[in-house]
Length: 356
Image (cartoon, rainbow, N blue to C red; front, top):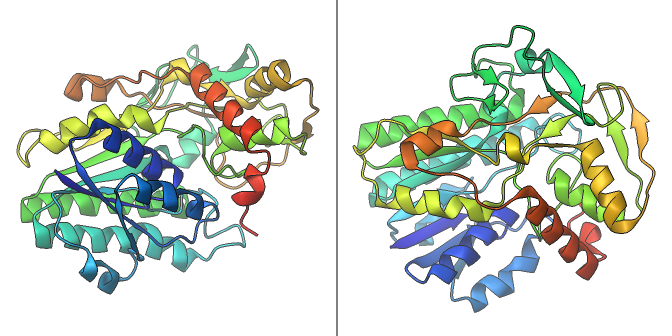
């Protein structure tokens, strides 16, 4: 099968590409505009693996004209920050162009070539107000849902399920992904090509370009090791907020199943994909792990919340297990150790991936 990965030189795209090449059964092509700091570091390695790379931008339909026909597209190109468009560093128009217009252009590409399409979406499509006001309690240094109180429909101790509301506000970033999901499913149904949407939890692993607003596990570990300033922001200012953790390599088994599916094989087009409650960890717990690995390092506190922040975001991926037989296999501790090993070997990593 000939597969095109957009955003191939980003962390997720490059990890998927390397893993698929190791499988030896697919021909890979990649597209990247290289505007993400650090993405150039992956170019030479991917070319050495025999992957044909195209320098282009999915926002520009004409950039896709030079790309040959493929059997499948994995859309991993996006601005992945929930603060994008409102942080004063990126514009709202650019966010929409990257995450929505770019997806539309790739759907038109799939329509033209009859290719299948997998959209890598996000947990941030879920409605913010009910998650921000979720009743939580502190357990072992981390927030968890207070099951003694009434929880919103679609939320349990196992996480947020696909039935949870995607009603706005979900952030500008989340809105672009919700719209992309709807259009992707609509294109597939209208023009009869297979489309699948994987709503992914927080991605993490060695080589991720960590920043405070994205790649938080990599950012925290690299910063702690380098004795850089760290701060708990929002809520009680004690770092109890929780996220789950997923390695991109865990996507491969699901992608292979989706490659083999046809446009009518399943009505379940949208599934959560995450490390789930077993992988969930608070910043405070992550700090404790780093203290054990690298020695103590103080963390400042600031209770003032950031826009769109929520105390607990864990995806329930039980539907993916039911529909696809998929479960994550890479433990959180393995992911943290992988990031730490990479950080020790690349002490300048945060500078490489810094926006300025």
